Length: 68
Image (cartoon, rainbow, N blue to C red; front, top):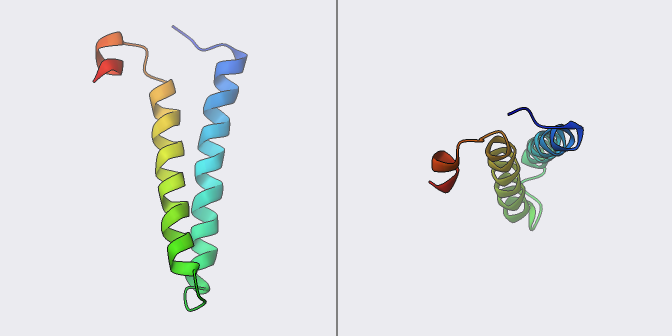
């Protein structure tokens, strides 16, 4: 099964959001001495992991793998 144009758009947007969040974490690493920067880095890292796994999950079509 091949995803349609809308599905590909969701996958690309999810991967793009993960890349954007990781680039923000990279920038925040230089600002980690500022108050709240370390917490925000952890938050953005969590967002990046979520977006990456969600994009990968959108590419899984087998129902047994999807349920696991």
